[in-house]
Length: 394
View 1 (spheres, one colour):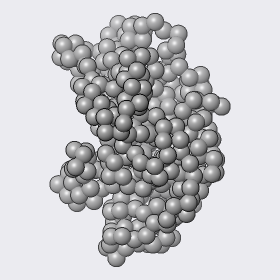
View 2 (cartoon, rainbow, N blue to C red):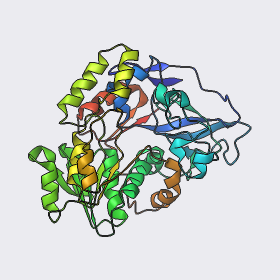
View 3 (cartoon, helix red, strand yellow):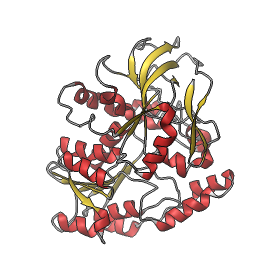
């Protein structure tokens, strides 16, 4: 089959790889009909290369049609249409019983000290072949796949794989009081959904921040108040002034480790990228290599007693944090990989009607064949051609 493979920094290629097959009784094989490029895929394209090897198959936002199931899979059959969550969870271990699916003890990558295995996402998370391919082997298929209606556009449901429940969890964790103010740093795909979900779940005011004109315009189209950070010298100060001189009740950081405006973090990432893999892994994992400008701005902007919710991916263990200020101001900080299946039952009814309250059909800017994935990665990273979200068609 054809699949998108990692070959090196900023080097991804569509190649022929072996077809997946049933390996465990709880496996399924899914023929992919749509698969998206995620913002966190760009971390693999740029920063997290030391944890990949040439030929690794990328992608963790797939959906398609079940082709085959193992003997241990019930409730799923060939012909079913499914979305595949990016994290692989068993549904029955101690963590899964508490709906902490991203910490599944059955698939935890204990050798790396990490949580549940992920599709297409480095040796840190199990080196499981990803879904930017024609077919995908799905472990733990007795629990993971989300059955969806046989009719309706793929893009009605595709984002259940990651960015829609990730945004839902970010908003839930932000815990904006009814009628309160939520600020969202970063209006990429997750940030767009955070802003829309914030309004849907009762925030009185949602303010989105970015510097890319197309992203700002898309948020405006959905009734979000926006700030162009390129026009501001003091982003936290501007937010505080906008919201009663106190700041927003809650702030979501939907940007993560590759934020603009963090020259020291960019220098550290560049330096790590020049090292041999083992040294680069140590630097990335143990040293502060994240670009923290957005996270620090979020912490400074939120009102006293407010909550900062992280959905953006961070990688370092020694990142400097303003703990004195956080403690003094009584800030709550919530974060983590999304527990996808925890939220999908709440979200799915919003996708099945005609009204599309979350605007899922107004996010994708580019739909291209899998063969053009390398060009799509470059376009997405460089934010060219108004690119906000890319869907690949195998």
